Every structure is written in structure tokens, then in C-alpha cells.
Image (cartoon, rainbow, N blue to C red; front, top):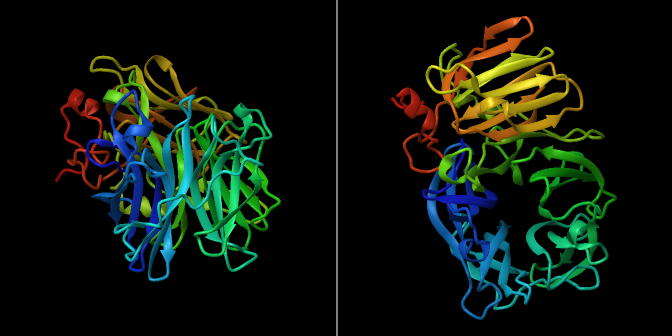
Length: 458
């Protein structure tokens, strides 16, 4: 349902889908801390496996820093692994050290494995295979050259790599761009001018390319300033690229696209947590969230929808109290759905979802707005999901909002309108591993307040 290894947080990740239909995730990992030093704490890749993209099992560390003096001695960041011959190839971000101004020096390395399970990596040589070209990209201070993603070229027998970079022709605070390079053999690369350079983005991270059913291309990119991700489409890799705006709301980051067990195309992403599991804790690197179905019709902006693959984890509809649940509600002007109340004896909402026309928001104690968005059109229905502190809202089946709230106690959901209040039936969620001490377990605050056992225990 959501995943982070015991005692650690997840950042950027990659997915491998195997011939038997199972999956492997490789991910950056680091400890829980408010002062997160990504140069010293993101020095290895964790690995986990799943049969259904919901229930993940940790499998330990799969890759780490290079030897002292190498181009990847300081840190290893976002990677992309993919089938190659009878094994696997992986392009990955390498950090050798710092500039005089303290900026990470980034390049891209290559590793191979004779296996297909995300283990057994051997580096290709002792140097990076591609570095930023100063003719087009910033190098040294405030550089970017990371998050490689590789696909087959649609105009040759070779490969195309996209990366997060900084456009040297733009002011640094709006220089975020998608760089690209081409290669015939994965080991020798030619760098080209930016593929996409919006001119209004600070960092355009974790670019992902996906070939759509009509032969066109989808590009997803995470936006540093908003902490969400956007979508572009193009008829061919070299463009022209059309920007469609946000696809994942603030709090959804570093997307990856994969084919689900049911054959549909889905997007997985990370979502943050808070240090100390409290509303006052600083946001920190978080966990892997459950999949969303990618809906991409020719000529229309893509969107993320509810994925039916979660249905086996939902119990029968009821009007009871559940900390982890999914509920549907018809929307009328001024509706508010109360999900949790304050401490015993106080009936005020500690967590609620409100929709007033196009204005959709999640509120916490005292009505404090935790997350908000303006929808393109007033929705007719909302689907709300809560897993412990994590909240997701779908408006007319489009993923629209996400928030964190560690306050309150579970109560039966109630929809409040100008005409009064009424119950909202919910489907409780059965957690894959409710007792495991990681993100598959949940914040215990509400359980402690009510004395209730976590959902899923039998």
C-alpha cells in the first residue's frame, strides 16, 4: 500500500518488471532526520520486491558509493535500470564531491548486471559515461546533471537519455530543464541542447519518458518549487513538446510509469512524511505511495485516476469507524467531509475534506488548511483515501490533492452541507503488513487515543 524500509525513508526510485509478472523497486534511502544531508546519507540503493505493486517486501541494499577517488565516491543518487541482453543495465547519478561554493559535482555512471533482479551490479570503468556540456548546461556552481532515464531512440537503433540539468542560457533560479544525450552503445554519449527548457522552473527533476499507444511520447518531470510533477507530450522524442501542467499534486514527487498486473499503465510516486510523526515535525523524505492509473488519450491532457488494483485490499462497505479507509461522496456546494475528530469529548473536526465549487482543500485542527487546489471545473463526486496520517483526494476520478495529518481520533465519516449532516459509508483498508515497523505500519496516535487495534489484524 505504501513502502519504506525499516528505520529509513525513501526518496527517488526506479522499477523493474520481471517476466514472471513480479516487480523490483530500487530506491534512494536515508535515515529519519530533520537535517538531512543528501551527500552523506543517500549513499546506497535499497531494494524491495512485490507481486502486485501494493505489498512490498524489503530485500536489503543493492548498490552503493564508489571507492575513494572515484567519480561516485561521495554519493549515488537517482538511477534507471532496464533489461539489456540477458541481464540489466543501469545509468545512475554520481557525486564526486563539492564545488568551492558547496554545490554537488554530478555526473552519470553506468553499471551492468548478469541478473535481472536488481542485484549483482558491476561498474563500467572508473569514469562517468556522460557529463554536462558547458555549451548548453551549467557546470560547477549550481549545476544539475542527474536523474538519467533511458529509452530506445525512435529515429535510430540507439538510445536516448534524458536528465535533470540547468540551462546555461537562463538565470539560475529559472534554469531547470530536461537535457538529452544519444548513444549507440550506452557507453559513449553525445550531448545535445535542452529537450525541454520551460524558463519558469527552478529544478525539473526525475524526468521520465513513456511511449504511448498511438506512438507519441509522454514526459513527466518533477518541479522543485511546487514539489509536484507535470506532464508534456510530443509526437516524437525530439519534439515539439506540449506542456500540460500539473499531473501530480504537491506532495507527489519522482514518478515512475510501469505496467500493472492487470495490464493497465500506472504511475507510482513518492510522498513525504514528517519527522517525529507529528504535525509540527519538519517534512522529510518519505515513502512510496500506491499506484494511480495513467489515463492518456490522444489530443487530451493526461490524468491520474483511481487504480482498481487496490480493490482486493478493501473490505465491505460499512458505516463504522476506520483509520484506514476509502469513501465516496456526492458533491454539492459547501460540502465538508469530517474524517477525524479532536480528542475524546471534543467533536470539532481534526481532519476534513471540503469542496466549495472548484475550491478543494484538506483541513486540520482548527480548520487550518493543510493542502488546497483550484480544480478546472466543479466536481460531481469525490473519492477520499486515508492510510493513517496520509490523505488522498480524487475529484471525478482524477488524483487532485494529498496531505498529511497526525491529529485526531477516528470517527464515522460525516458529510456536512447547508442542509445538515449525514453519514458517509466507507470501505476499510486491509494493510499488507500492519505490524511491520516501517511505512507499511501506521502512525499510532489515533489508535492510542481510542485504544483500537490497527486495521488488518486478525
